[in-house]
Image (cartoon, rainbow, N blue to C red; front, side, top):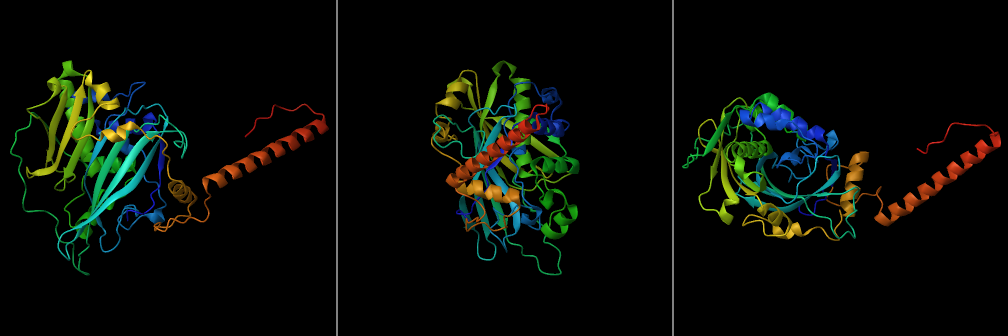
Length: 411
């Protein structure tokens, strides 16, 4: 699987997507946060809001029966997919001004865990987001810089349903209860409308978020499941609300790192409790702060458990543009993308998908209808020469007609 080709993704960071996300979340967040949801000019993406950009746009024929994309799937019998957790390192702000950004994805690790017959396959996906105008443009550049690094861990489980029998309930009888008391907590009830709108914004067709019958009869869950990425978005938003409310003199505060693990399902129409607690001992006079964040399900047990690192005041520039992030950071990646480029194979794969020629399996890496970068340059030069010849012929024809015509605009 680690050799499997993955398409690069290019998106334009326009206000439409992020404003739609903000309005989608507004009624589920603390009241004091609602005033912050008017998008200002020259604004930047909030941490985790990149999740509504760079969607996997595939032909419907490339989706699996449960609506998930095929390129991360290990295949049958491991067909039940869940989002186990992940981490994000925020290196530079991403401006919301319509500029293009690229996102590359690779499968960095695959592990099989569990005893025979109950194995689970853990697939780690790494994503790198950086600015640009067109694929491959980083080749030869000296100052292209990474803006965001993300890791996702997906878990694939066996489909052990027996033919003719209903799915086995996935509800655990054990709930690990938090031992600490939060500094701040927010209660909310996710609705099916919230799940649908977040699915639409992220182009996520996974049936566990959309089809209650599928959840009960196929997966064994009692209701629609809340998205793993949505939970980390909500935790970040609640923390920012807490900072605005109780630490106004410490702003601006930047989120530099988040890691999280999904421990138990969260269901639509069931109350969840999002908790924030600051750790006791911090360095730099409290400018660099680590927060414990978690979500409790309806039973009061851990559903999501995470850590968020923030920095304020003068530490921001040093931390994000030249110094070590912290014990959780990935400072070597901050050094830039000198001389790198999106591999030609990834470019070819995306072109094939856009043209509708890609099949569900792409591990062989061969796409006969695509061309090497050198061949593409030669073909572009030939096309340009043909266009210029056609323009000259048109001009000569107009001169022979000796008529005044409207100005010619090149298409």
